[in-house]
Image (cartoon, rainbow, N blue to C red):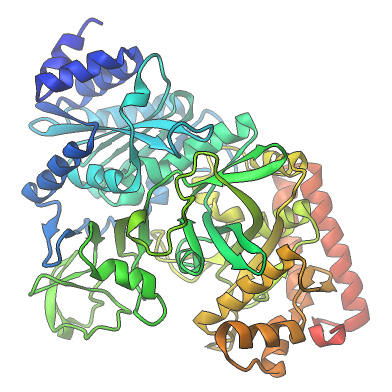
Length: 599
């Protein structure tokens, strides 16, 4: 290779040169060489084994990208005040055609722009190259990935969230590629370019993890594309084992960020809080977590509602806090914590005091921790065969329409009328105005790299492959009456328990035009069993009365979207049948339908 000698000379030790040569992988050498020539670092450090993680932790502190806190293993990182969430408008799929709901840019134009921004961006800096596995090693689910960055914080995050896996790159292996540079941290020139053709993501002038940690949501764009081509699912879903009367039942759960996914994950045995690879194996849906860590929203976490996460964030352990308040004594505070609010400290904007009239932490402030820190970690969290999925949850933040829990009639009905019809209030995880309703099918639209119709065709085809089909449920923890939530935070445990009992076939359900709903008598018993609390019939009626007129408007809205993008016929048919059912019920019962009519 013409210039490989020069790139090898930049490696910080002879040991690393031998390691690269031992791989005998021209794809790896070619990729590193290309980025070295583009970004022009002064040295290269390979992250290949546990001792390299220590080096990265030290560099993160030396470069002041992280500041040590008083609890052993805890550090804090601050992003630019304007770089606090996923940057939708600066993120592009490189494609030469316009794709509905996808922010595209012509490929050659996008590559020219990102290469010009990355040119010499690492001059005078060290470049770090991390070798990782998405999914368990020695598994049909596994995808190899390399992250290149000049940010020790980014690589430190990758080291917590993903499996180091240098040895599996031996030979002529293919892999996903991620290139990041802090650049000048000029937010006006923040760009994230996703090149599906080369399975490569480039990002520059950002450090917020959602824009810079490649293997997380940036990789999701690449793996969705691969999954659709190969007939499996790469999803924005948690994987949780819930205990039932007949053992543990594994569910996947899809919620937009900030809408209950992490808190739902803490109720059962944790496998994943965010992402899932799902394959059909012998007629069964089996899933793994691509990750081995959690990058979670911290606002509102308190010892009463989130005891497991609270424990993780307060014990000696490897934790990176980002964009919370650092207090004078070297501890941290975030909004919604049940600890006393400090008088002053330092946050992402600089010095802060309580008399400024500003929040102490950003609403999208985060924590990054390894899965092994959680006492509810499931024993199968790294099982190369995955776990069998018996239930699928699609949840939203909807203040007005959707009832707390509903079960779909079938896999296709659930995929289309629940998952593909999700509308949810925008949260702080995305830059922009909050509390606006957005169409967000499967909570994955932000990460969609291809036509939504292709994605749904693959999803429905996946349903048809299965001999044992998971039940599909719609959840909504946020229904309001006026300004008052109709549910407490802990009520979700009851909705989950009902779903588990449905999987086990231990409770019946009420037929409605939008799906199957719980009876009052069953929920009354479950509230006693799960929460030791009385459940009043008037609460049940408020929570589960169907606003049929609003459901009809929603169905017509979603139907219009899918007709416009020429979605598969099965999508249109399911929505039209749902529309007809709702119209029929309105003609018989009026605009609202109480579940007590049938119970």
